[in-house]
Image (tube, rainbow, N blue to C red; front, side, top):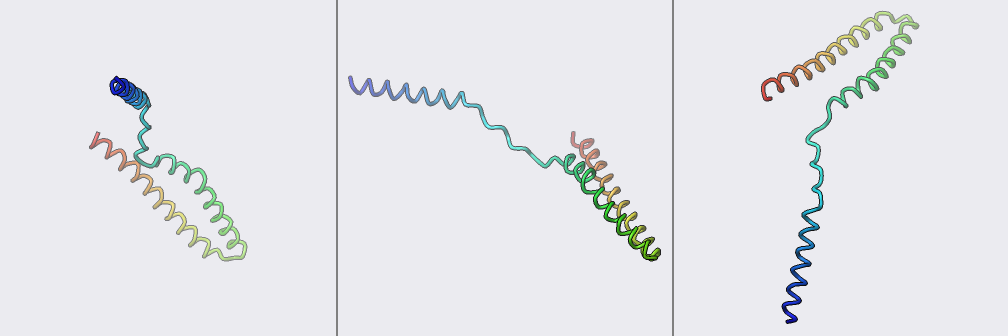
Amino acid sequence: MIAIELMETASSGVAQALHTLASTPLAEPAPKGIDTNSVVSFFASKIAPILLAVLGVIFIGRASRGEISKVLTSSAIAIVGLAFIAGAATLFFVGDYLIKLIFE
């Protein structure tokens, strides 16, 4: 008799534990990657203007000292660098488009 009561108590406890586990929502799946659009927009809106302002101050300082040839050389290098950055960004978006076109 006592064994039957213990079995019923144990089985109701197990049933309650299983019900609790079954009703608990599963955790959200982890994000699968980095949000590159947010990273690119952060750099474009925050970092790039600061770097361009620093370059501008350097160029103005050199030009005021009469180092026009160095300013022109540095300006040309900066423009070529910006063109490379713009090209890399373009390839990033074109590559994303091509991947979506091929695999989706």
